[in-house]
Image 1: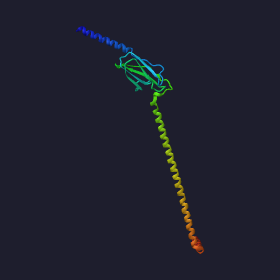
Image 2 (image 1 turned 120 degrees about the vertical axis):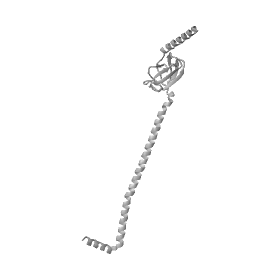
Image 3 (image 1 turned 90 degrees about the vertical axis):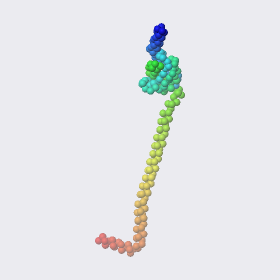
Image 4 (image 1 turned 180 degrees about the horizontal axis):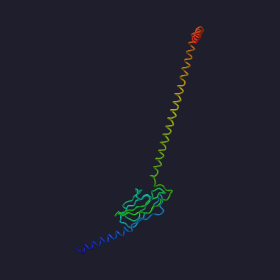
Length: 198
């Protein structure tokens, strides 16, 4: 019984030592020449599988991951770089024990291939749509202002013509009254006016 216990203890100790050795050498390598929409190989050593690899902003490794790959059991993984060129990123790897390692930050190099960035076109479409809506709104506002200006101009013209019409009507009525009075009436009215002034 004592021999069996000793054997189990020795095996457990050996496992712990092996695990500690694996963790001591656990690291993820910084890839070279990472190109937009081209495959690149990620490599690491040590640790205890399975692994999780996260692609994170290079200037803020604690930020939310841009990409994440889980359940990795080997020590290599090929990734098609679906991150826009000239973006600085970094790699974080976590093994099954929770041990975490990070690569150095690196840049995504330019490429004429942008086929893997289909989601990147959405902001442009949205911006174009917003511009179109703004343009339509501006046109509608201009049209409304123009209509209001014409309406005001027509109203003013109509208003200014009304007094003229009234004056003309009044003048016409006065002329008709004078014609009805005749010469004798006009003379009598003039005499009365002169007498009133005197």
